[in-house]
Length: 124
Image (cartoon, rainbow, N blue to C red; front, side, top):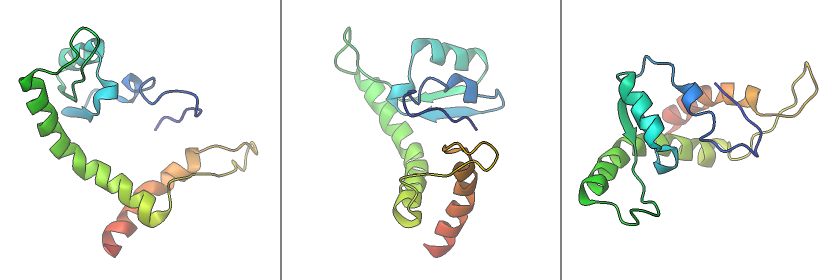
């Protein structure tokens, strides 16, 4: 688990979160870079990063649009879980005070998320 301050984009620590034992990595188009895709392929990990248009190619090719639809179906299950945690468990805002340092942050609350997911599955 990696936590960052709110002013750090989620994509910055993305490469550090890949341990190398994954079969496939799924992510939305914000995470797609050619370098990240090449690194995943070099590690033997299937790249499930959704494609995005850019200034040189403002419209995705039909193959990229089909790929995104396929990835979206797999990602929907994960995104639905997070939506349920936010909606049912109230995890849209996470606050805590670290007892050791007295600093505010989010590290301890994230450890509770998997337990909340189990509760949400039983309740739903």
